[in-house]
Length: 196
Image 1: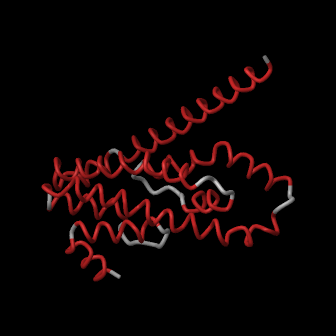
Image 2: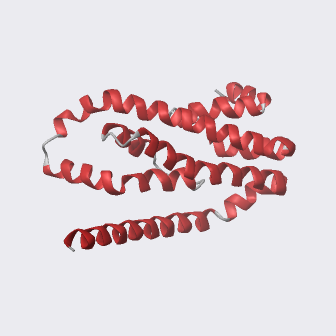
């Protein structure tokens, strides 16, 4: 597996694109796309934004593959849970707030579980365009930010990311709460308008 990763790194932008598809599809990847992107941007700063763009496109393709598989075959796996009150509550919650649980880990470059929620988006038939827009809104700033970091800080990028890990965790939590409260506010306003 390490030799495959080395080959992808040697391929540069094409390697980033292929790795992003594999990573987005939910297959285990050693080191992760973030690490590979920063490493390549350190070594090839002139191609940093090209590689970021390819990481975004590859990640969207791979994520869509996982979403589409879940949309076609995931319902069969969940059939035994249908009709249970807890599951119905979870599905309603996911339909309203679940894309937040896709957006936050897709945005922040820290290891957070995301595959389960991508699968839920497919199974619960979140519209494909909505899913892809949420993913793009998260992946664009993530990968372009990492590319900028790699190109500007060079080999200091990795120590910088390690030293700011808890800041990113805190930012992810704060962003989740902020977006959740915003959704609640919009829901409340809609309900009040419906009563008028």
